[in-house]
Image (spheres, rainbow, N blue to C red):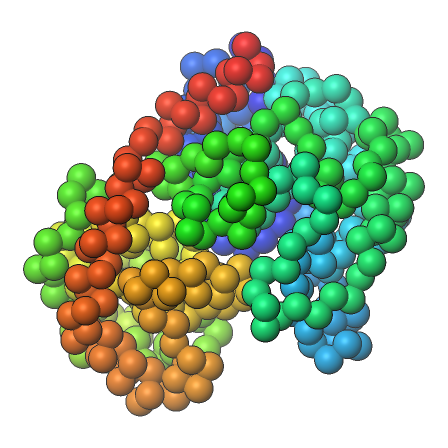
Length: 394
């Protein structure tokens, strides 16, 4: 059986791993899978579907240039690429070469990358079929002339894309990667499986390929609005906020939480305060049935689950991607973004959550929006992924 490589090169969220697991589940009868991951804390979720799971060469964030320019956020995906190594020729060459060595040594015949631009370039340089997959934000269409600004109030550019293109070419072409003439072409591959909703896609109107459903598992029914719980999903840096952790202990309604990798100390603290702490992902039908309000950072997967379930949400975005998605859902009327001031004050944050609990208009809008989005969400993601990838590989 042919061997495929699931590649994850950057980012911190668990969603990258769940997406790659969906690929393995969809094609387990056609490929033996390796998974090379930039973070190993979620590796166990791939053990059942992959023959080998091992650490990957990774893209890491470099904050020096941002700090020198007053801390401006990465206004475009091209700016973000500059922050994670695409302005460093020697690093970029090592990164691509590492992926090429894995492809050669492991006998890889297909690369599927979630947030893995160097893995895609490595495959392209060796003539190995490659497919990009991920949320719309991190799956930019390679046909674009340049990267667009995500949010108007974060529009400062600190890098010249033409300069970055020249750096990429100097690093990549000696490794057999075809020269590019614009930065989005870094993502050129045999197919791109962007899994998102049009309302959450920063490249809506710029794509040439159809979007795929953002979640593989959706509740059988939209919430009837009878739940009484708050469902909290925190997966990364939310736990670094003392005010947020204290606020969650008493939100004004029964609170159920899933926090992957939670420390024993924090788990004991939550449990002592009556928080129902789950140690494994909660079945989606149970979330839809029991939940009155969701609290999260607008991680793409859980946000889309809430949108599909018809559940109102409160968001505490931890970075610009999550803020972008949260603002789109807030504009649609189904979510409220907690302000920075609220997140830093226990009482203010609890008041904001309790106000959202009582917001019948937002709850009704969430259910109406779910009805509108349902046709896009209920399609079989695994079947569509299988169809698209097999069209590339045969």
